Image 1 (cartoon, rainbow, N blue to C red):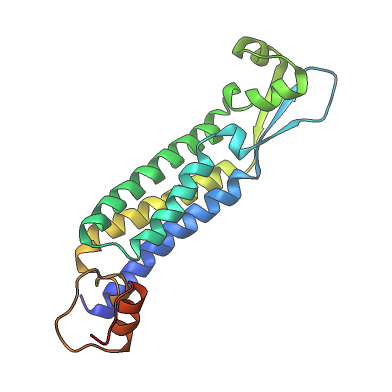
Image 2 (image 1 turned 45 degrees about the vertical axis):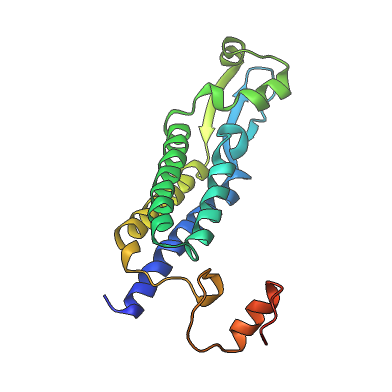
Length: 194
């Protein structure tokens, strides 16, 4: 694989994880479910993603941070982060799929309790007459697939990626020094003229 192809593969993996995490964050603020309750009101109660699936925002933020970290870490951490990305995507996807397909009563419990004052699984199940899903849980499942694919690509190709730039290296080259090396010495509090 050429260096250009290696860069494209790395960029594709990082962007897939980054876009998946961003979509997850956006989706966490949107209405995922609408619960109709038997209280005489015809207006359904909107259930945002963070109430329907509490881990959607943390997992999505972790995917964003992981994607950015993949751009600078060394080979060993690339593999570790790729495995973590696959796990994050799988967890996010499973939770969002469960919400989209099953529309469980526990996903609407918080907002229904706030609206009606009832609590407990049986009390909420007794008052909720219908739960409808919006497209956002399915969109989040698609985002999780992006995260999983990005992690899988990173896992398969991490050994071919070029290492991070000189800015992130901790070893000191013994060869000729240039102005960037001098600035790095100054940043560490060392005198480059000695």
